[in-house]
Amino acid sequence: MLSSRYLHLHEALGLGPMWLKRGTVVLPAESEPAGVVEAVEAAALPQFQKQAAAPENTVAKPVQQAARPTPHEPAAPRRVAPTAPISGAHAATLASLGLKTLRQKEWEAEAEAAAQQAVPAEPQPDPDNTVARHKQRLSETVRPAKLMIVSICPSPEDNIAGRLFSGKVGELLDNMLAAIGMNMQQSHPTSWLDATEFNPNPDAAKLARALPRIRAELELAEPHAVLFLGQFFAAPEQAEIMDELCGNLPVFTVPHPARLLRHPQQKAEAWAELKRLREALK
Image 1 (cartoon, rainbow, N blue to C red):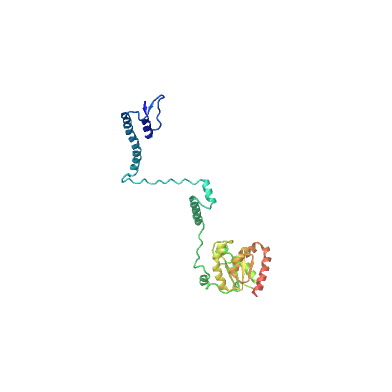
Image 2: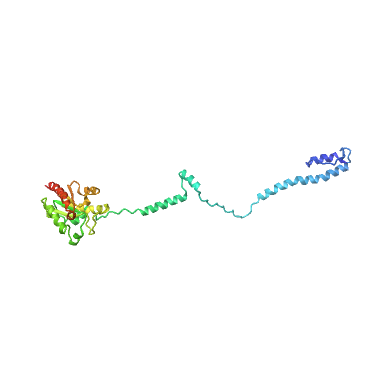
């Protein structure tokens, strides 16, 4: 037999439903002896107190552990994940956005530095290579002349002889001048390049470097016209620097006497130009 008060107490304690055997007789509460009821309640009360206290202890314990910091324990260093290499797809995305990877910037900086090293520095102007300086040095040797005769450079024979238009070349030039009523004493013979190295086809840089000196000679000689000798001066690309030298002076060009000695058939061409020179000198 089982008292109904025990069932009510079991339910009040939150112990869930009580499973009874089939055929169990439940007595009403008023018919059960007082001693039995008190014994059941006394036996159930400690268990209820134990179950009710357990949740409080389990909750308080972790709170106490969390509130108790470890004294003098240094903070763990922050770990920085290594930078992953930029993939090809990532680089393509950056390029589409107009951005550059760090490696691309390094490559561009290296290429720019290499390009700057490859470009030769522009030559500094020579303070001695001016028209004024050359005029000071040449004022005692260059005299006024009616005609200025210019070749591109001294020939090997001229370097040996120590003067321009030596040998048969000089003889032919004298005859050419005589044909128009001129002679060498009325002329100022010179060469654009005054170096001893034979260089009949100098580049533009060498021509420009020699320009101040030959310009000084022209200003000192004060000629009425300039006669250029050689096919070099007949080339169209030399017209600009020849104009820079001569300005408004009349300019004439004939084959070099050395060439006329090798190609006599060109003397007719030279004679036609010399006649125009003669008219300009009148």
